Image (cartoon, rainbow, N blue to C red; front, side, top):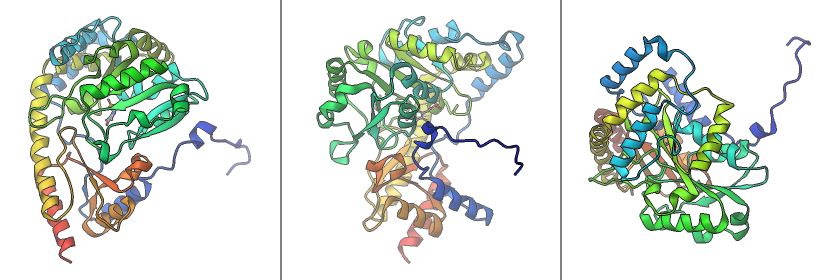
Length: 394
Ligand SMILES: *Cc1c(COP(=O)(O)O)cnc(C)c1O
């Protein structure tokens, strides 16, 4: 190394991030793939199905139009905001003002990651579900806040037990993240749950951010509800939605937040200093996608439902204890006795070349569980079950 190099020090906020618990599994997986092994990966929550062609067509046409080549409006095109409001009304029977109560995002992760910068001061508490989507915690840290973990327990059907949150955490809370249908547990919430959350938020003056990435992936005719369908929700919070999972558009980066006008304007202020909007061609594709939301949701949910039955029935036939998710494309299950989450994941990977996600990677209360994504073709699921069967008979 040249002596001209300065010493580059990691900022404290990055040092605070927890160790990446999937690193060992990732390394092992790469090693096996390099050896030419056929690894079946149930780890990633990223749809294997392509974006519908009619959406791709809109993008390619819009990409050729020079009017779309310039900086986009920070708040998103009016056409997109109107399309979002129209979908919301049709799907949830909730009226949103497209100018003030809808904010397009560069994927919902972008908004989730930035919202604490708008609401949280150093030392404030951010209430986060555990296990949970890891971004809630890192976003809180980046804003100088302290994440307070709200355990999601099997005996409570993975709903937050609001009564168990300590008074001093509530007192200093500025923000509560919720996420139903839930990643990783696949649990769904009902109206009473949200009513309770809203009451708490009013009593302690904190904002609720409900992450609703999976409302459109549900089974048996279930239509998961929006947080904003509950009276008083708009006074205390916002909801995050994503086009990623609904339309197989994870790589495109488009989502939105909606609800409380003041919260959205603060988030918009943060964003105005960080990004310059979503590529307009992608916004036009989003307008098209939302017009077909109902059909796409139905079609994709049917595909995942079939995969879910293949996987869960297959695992239960081996004597595992797995229940069928009612929504999301995740199967969440306890590890068989005698294993930690990491031990199970490592053994399945080494001996069956099957990747599952160890639950502890989603937080301490994920220990003792594992997650499998339904983002694989039927044949791959069948092949994985066959391998596990062989493992059992050894
Ligand atoms: C996938 C996912 C997101 C992020 O979605 P993008 O819109 O692609 O950023 C947010 N929350 C949860 C719980 C997710 O699983």
